[in-house]
Amino acid sequence: MVEDDERVRHLTVNRLNRLGYRVHAAEDGATAIRMLEEGVAADLVFSDLVMPGGLTGHDVARRAREINPAIRILFTSGYAEDFARSGSPAEIRLLRKPYRLNDLREAIKETLASQP
Image 1 (cartoon, rainbow, N blue to C red):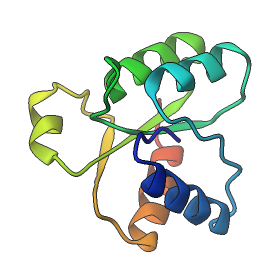
Image 2: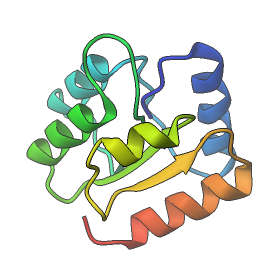
Image 3: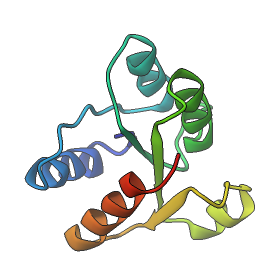
Image 4: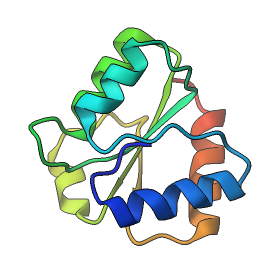
């Protein structure tokens, strides 16, 4: 789970834990990539699309798939127009902020059921 806003990251980790997922959280793209390179096992990368620090959710997704081609990707953003302009591959979903717990549950379930 990659989210630069500490409050949103904390809330999302709590939500994901309540849904039964084991979560590794990163405050930026570089940290998330480093975690994957160091062997953190992940079935899904749930990443904010727009983050400070020079790496976007797309950068994280691209590197995550180089490390593990089977990994699933789910983006989140409060700025849907950034997703549309970004040229995101069709198979990558966007969960628009703000979202409810049920929206998160369904988005993750569908993403995990999809082909990477």
